[in-house]
Length: 524
Image (cartoon, rainbow, N blue to C red; front, side, top):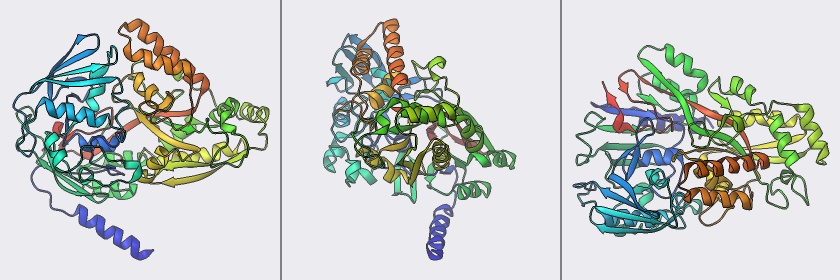
């Protein structure tokens, strides 16, 4: 054990001890990107890393407003067709010209079965190259939010993908290894210089970047070191070994603020934290009750909600950096309402009565799957909830593991009870409903691991994607959220508030999606 700890410390010291050159930004967070394949995993740190190498047609600025990227303009030219005019003179970092053919290829790749982005763009019927700098995207009926959806689809070089036999996305849940997992080549502001997963990733400024005149002062080099241990991340920042920490422990924020030469930025994040429940199986795979499923009973789910004290978690675990939630949809997302987000007060007496009425007066046992390196204080949240649920007779066995194991387990639907966080890149409720609440299918409900299915909610989610009348669409969204709130296949906990900590020689605006885009950064 001692030898392992010394070895780990030595690897970390080696990773951090690299000399900082002019305009080198050294940063850390608790968990690495899962893969460099831009269409494999729809996971925050993974897409955050990818955006530095790859570009999308449209991007989000620091206020999350849509702005031109590889597309300079876009407009609906028919009820079912959007036209995108592409930026001229762009080249991939290997010198290959960027054309409409690369866009067509990338969208086809993102629609493949192994892509974790197929739900984003499931409405797409066809992507056509009209000329080298014009693309038409045809959808199955009108889609008023297509521009919001394409902000997350990264564009690859068709020639590069064919050369390296990566025309299909990596199947992450099956642990597939392809060339695109550890290599990358795009049109973005950086090129990949070194990739050692879970140890170190180095990105260098792309000398041929099309936006170098617009973004003149961003760092020459980015050195990323994943550091799982919270105390080690803070120590590295305080000692000057790091310039930027994405997720300093919330209990140390005050200490960082008081340290000379350091500063913090804070904002509400577009991300909700919640628990998923297997409500669809006849019997819980990881539960003590045989022959029936206690989570299928809405009274049990309500009892669990009443037993979880989100305010106590906010105060004691999150140090005030959370907002208790009644929805799995965040403020700032179209369709969010304060009324539905109101959370019922903790009521153990009522919770115990509901458990008894459901036939579980003596409770039951169940395993809880929890990541320990993904969300702010994720494992501590789960530990707190274990104690809270015990008060109503639910004995929870906590299974804590790295996100590299947690997410594949969920994607294989191998969990009865789990913690999950969900950001909303499109800033529209359809994204949450389609991924988490629609009936699970090849292109819908791809992150709905609960087994929940409601025909009315499915129909509303399909309809709102095609409805161009804003008032009618908003009514559909509101009705869908009322159904989801009443059925409660998830237990909402809170919306995250985020804190970025950094040297005062770093200038970067904080992004409410918790995804630092370092082309907006400057080094003093």
